[in-house]
Length: 254
Image 1 (cartoon, rainbow, N blue to C red):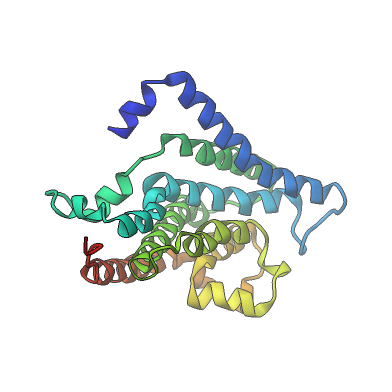
Image 2 (cartoon, rainbow, N blue to C red):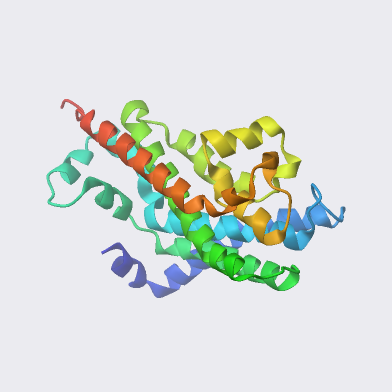
């Protein structure tokens, strides 16, 4: 329904998608401005940073496109309109994800894919069958990890009700963090996004294998192929958090 309503005004859709594309591209413009003054950032060249940026943007863009509407849940909990979703013969999670589905978010995916395409053309990568297979696997696994963070953040809103910005700190903030190499951050932060909130599996670890870079925290080489397992674990935990949050919902009482 939301896709049909969006495409009913094609010019408006094109302009909003273009605006979304331009707005997200400003993040990469900031990186370009940095490299107008330096030759490397944390030991990474511009094409290598573009590779990190592209992988993160595509993975997050896919997750944002699929379930980016989850941050609206807090408003539904506060005004009691979540009740209307509970009485429908469809999973509540699917309904919340589809609520005001924004096809314009495709602009972020396209922008990230273009930067990733530039990086793949500019970086000298010694391709092997494993590296070729790792690319789409890492992108899809990264999208699943971000989806799990979206769902876990939405589950927290059942308790906090007005916590969308807390959720955004880990979703939008996480993707901004991953656009830069792990070498520019302190080890404590790198440990946190590896072992606590495993965002490092979105791109830092698989990208280290593809680019032939040292692994963060001197981790073993097999961790580059762990994103699917990490994504499955994150989705399972997020699912448990969602079920617990939904069971705790008591409406507004009015």
